[in-house]
Image (tube, rainbow, N blue to C red):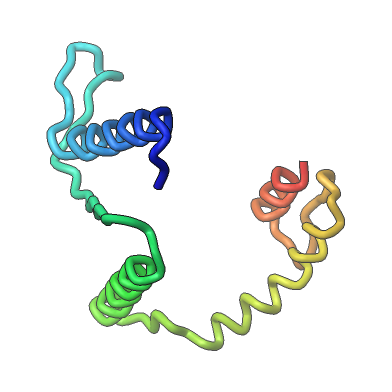
Length: 125
């Protein structure tokens, strides 16, 4: 995305780490120290795009939407559950108000659970 020498070098470093993570997931690592053992044989996907533009972003969205529909069919769940979406909108209203308040000292209540409050407090800090 940039021809600047430092951007090219940075991209190469990021790409190296990406490929190394895929390699680590695939092959793992044996070691005498149990904390340094990684099992390997873990599936992963690596998608490489020539550039990030509207066409490729749309292709990625279509790919993951297809994946969502397929897994929903296999697991017998409705991947596009409209009542669930509507319920999410109801839950989002007090969350949006809490985010807009900017307060990072919220406490859990009837409309927002403790985990969500912790996330809001983190985002507002």
